[in-house]
Every structure is written in structure tokens, then in C-alpha cells.
Image (tube, rainbow, N blue to C red; front, top):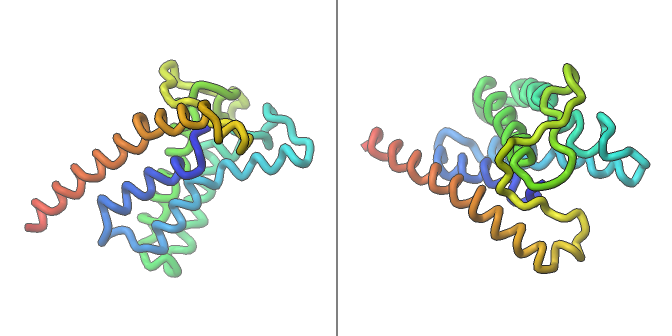
Amino acid sequence: MPTIITHAVPALAARFALKRAFPIRLFLLTAFCAILPDFDTIGFRFGVQYGDWLGHRGFSHSLFFAAFCAGLAALAAPVLRCRRWLAAVLVFVAIASHILLDALTSGGLGVAAFWPFSDERFFFPWRPIRVSPFSPRAFLSTRGVAVLVSELLWVWLPCFALALVCRKIRARRAG
């Protein structure tokens, strides 16, 4: 998995690209939802096995879970100060980006993207993002530095390059 901070990068980049169309409350929710699937690691403390449907990268890493959360976001749209469809789409995309990033990592069991229809775990054939260690001690090592460099190269730079292009396009259309 990429680090928690990196999972929030697509939401941050979208906020940068679409500032006026993306209220701060909605941004905070999408950043939280981009991280939300990794809360499944709490299950380790209760004996949930990695490969179980409740385990890491199980149901919380599925498009079904993303759609469920998107529905909740649509219901919360008045509090978020945005349209229902916008809340639903951005929350779905935030969670889907988490699934995508995890499927691009170099380790783990893959993501159960199509749960409950399939328990199969998936990876993309090309997996350039170094998997982040769970242990803080391992993260504060050369392995952790390699993970951060990998994330900067394969997530941060592309997200903010795309956000900058989108922002320039929006500025040209407005001006």
C-alpha cells in the first residue's frame, strides 16, 4: 500500500485543480475517504487474517464499498455545501483511487476490487509503487525512503502535473 498521506494526494490535487467547484468540506471528506479503506488494518489487532474478506485490502478496497460511501456522501451533500452528484462522484473517485494505487504496488495480496461478486485479489501487471511497510520502525529506514521516492515519482508528480494542466485549462476558459 502507499502511505496514508499519498492516498490523500489525488483529493488534494483535485482540490487544487477545481478549487471553486470543490468546497472545503467536500475536500476534507474526499481526503478522508481516500484513506478510509486502510482502516481495515485495525482488524489485525482482533485476529482478522489479511486474506479474509474483512482483512486488509478486502471489502473496504472494493468498488462496492466505494459506491456505498458515495451514496452516503450524496445524502450528506447539503452539509457539504455541494450538489449530491458531485459529492457522490468525488467520494467514489477518492476510494477508487485508493484501490487503483494499491493495485499498482509491489507487494501484499492484491485488492478485492470486485467484492462481493468475487473474492479474487487483483494487481495490475505493472506495479511501480513500492509497498509501504506497516511498521513505523521499518518506515524510518532505507526501505521507507525508497517508498517515499517511489510515491513522489509515480503518484505525487503525475497528480499535481495533471492538476496544474486542469487549472490552466479552467483559467483559459474563464478568462
